[in-house]
Length: 276
Image 1 (cartoon, rainbow, N blue to C red):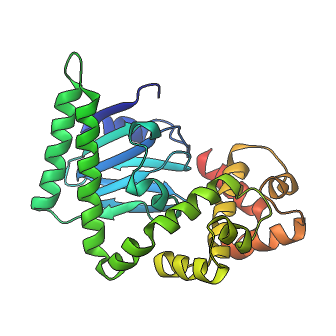
Image 2: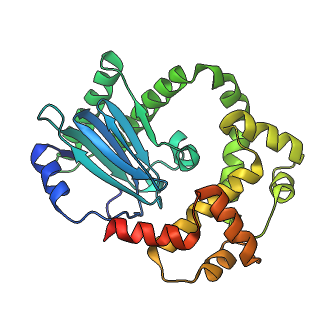
């Protein structure tokens, strides 16, 4: 995508077209927000597939391997799809969090909150249809959209709100540093030192927000990249392990099987059969 921002609708006709065309798991160089008003979505992301009924909001951050199949429910499919470059809104709440959550999709109830989200999408769409759309207006509307989605997320996870407020900055900084360094053979102490804190305190933060230790999050990020490389390249398993910081082939194989429940070779074969 060359544009900074675009918005479009997926209706019944478009949903059937997508279902009937080749649709392999892929990644892209932009952020994508899918807002389901009617119908269902079959979403393959983080190498798991789930189906969600509307209303829902699904966010896919840049670089994530995924596949979306829109489905009709009760004869209807009606999605908004918003795509934008990271630089369009440099700071978004979802941009870092969504990368590690097992599901990027948030279920909504029908009602006033979701109706307002739909109305904002209509306003954005109307502005983008102008001969010379004001991207500054679109940016503000998109930010409002994210604020409303985040408010709903907080409502659904009320017990974690205080933790998010107190630890949000450190956690996001950790994820940012991790994204730059996860291919290196670095452990918890490296990241804690980068954040000027103890390993114990950093572990306490990641445990409270994601219920995972720092080591688990590092391994999760490495594993996602390993799966990406297994799916998109013909590199050997040893090469892939070395590329993401595992110098010991046997250890990489052990970690992969423990985390995935199958060997790297089995995963590659299964994914290639799935998308062939």
